[in-house]
Length: 282
Image (tube, rainbow, N blue to C red; front, side, top):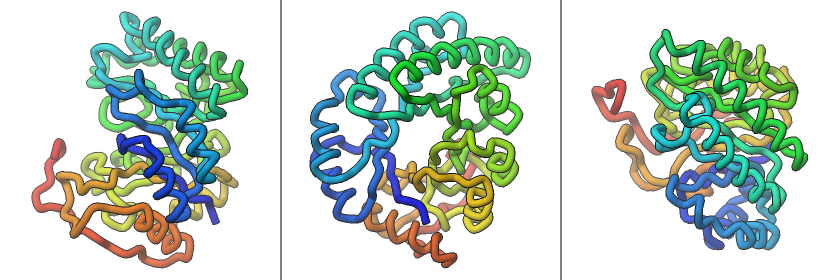
C-alpha cells in the first residue's frame, strides 16, 4: 500500500541502523538527530550507507530546540535561526535529501502574541522555501500541539500560504482535540510525508499505532481519498517511553508488522498499555 519509513528519532546514525532498516524491510529514513548532534553529522557516510543498504534518505528533520536559541517565529531569533537552518539544508541537499521537516514555532505562545508570531514565521518560511527550492527540495511544515503555531488546520493553511512551494508533514499525534480527517481533507496534496504515531487525546505520546485512541482505518481511508503518495513513516523511538508500559523495546520488525497489519485492515499486535493516571505533562 505505502512504503514503510521510520524516523531515526535520536537513534545513533551508524551503519548498524541502516542494516537494521534494510533487514526488516524499512525503505525510507528520516534523519532526526538529537539536538546536540547536528554539528557532527557524518553526511557523506550517511549517503554511503543509504546506497549500500538500499534505504532512501527521504527527509531531514531540522532542529527546533532549545526554544531560547532556535525559533523562526520570534523576531529576535528568526534571522539567525533561518541562517542556521539554511546551512543545514545545503548540507542535506548535497546528499540528495529533498524534504526538510520544520517546526513553525517553539512554545509557549500567549494568545495575544499569536498574530505577531504567525507573521514572523511566515516571513521565515518564505525565505526557507526559496532556499529549499534552489536545491530542488521542499520545506514540509509540521503541525504542532498545544500553544505552538500549527496547532489546527486554520493555522496550517495560514502558514503554508507564505509560499506556493511550502508543503506539510502531518503528525498524527499532534492534533490534540482536532479531527485528523478534516486536516487531511483540507490540506490535501500539500501533505507530502507523515509522522505516524498514536496518542491518548490528552497530550502527544508517540506511541505505536494501536496503543492509543486514533482510528487508523479512518486515517488510511482519508489519505487514500487525497491521493497521498508518500511513505508510511513512523516517528517513534525504540525505547519504552515513560507514559506507557511495554514488555520490551521496539525493533524495526515491529514497525513493519504494525504497518502490514494496518494495511491489511487488521488490528496491529499490541505490545503495551498506557500507565494509569496520565496527566497533561506525563
